[in-house]
Length: 355
Image 1 (cartoon, helix red, strand yellow):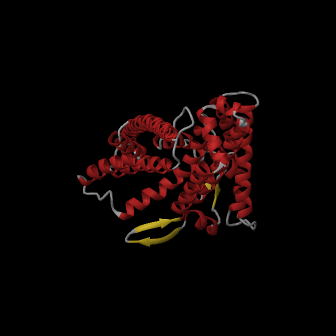
Image 2 (image 1 turned 90 degrees about the horizontal axis):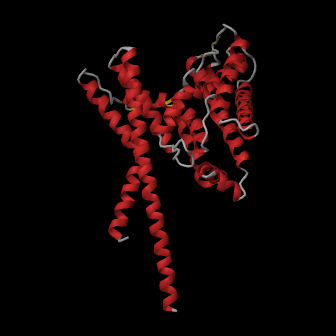
Image 3 (image 1 turned 45 degrees about the vertical axis):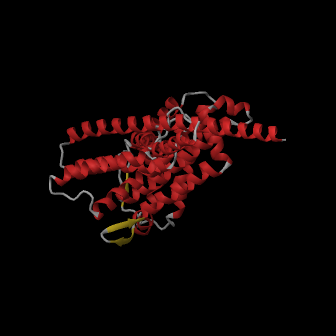
């Protein structure tokens, strides 16, 4: 492969790797133009800060879903785990409670992690498919939440706790920087380092890409799956705390469709359902795309039925485009890898001949 062709493929691979950014810009452009005809400034600093703030909540659940999708699985219990854990410990997070809010917050996350570990055991020990296992856990958690709280609503969350999770940090030229934005950024950085810079992350990628080869290479794939589902569910518990702080309440119906939103965010973000491929930063792009679509249609004041139709069509388009670009990137990366190996072999042969 000549240098010019090699450079072209590298550039294309880089561009395809930014597929989430491309989709995000397309969606922004569409709604900016449509709202402009209505005399609305869709790209105003205040509206952009609102979009990023709301998208930050989806980033957390998106990461929770992306981890298990990376393993070739799925977690349908995210929303119900958010509901059950906040319902169980929510009374201790109220203004009237004398308990330090950090204690019930920790219990929410630990309870969620335990539920995730049970999901992992159902998959690894009982050999139930991830879809069925987490589907069953979803119904069990949602049912337990209703049995535990019945028709009551937990309302009036500790204000200091709310400020910690959903408060505003500062304002710059009309743009509000908030705690959810900071939390989402920290989560993205943390999981980027885990996935790219640790043995655990590399084992997750390898297990998702080829579980049989991973097993034969000495990786305890069942353990990797259990850890992934435990971490995924723990993140769901933390997301539940954020949603509870935002709404100033919680109840058994909390986050009813969040697992679907998490799947959408992950797929738009470039994660492959087959497992073994995905960049955690794509989750941020996916979350922004999903909420931009919702925000854009709300600003256009479209009827709810029409919003649902358009939302579905746009999400299908976004997922299809991202999956197509991601597939092309994988093909180019394979070609570049083969080219590097060929160059290395050529260099070794050249050195051998010179001796």
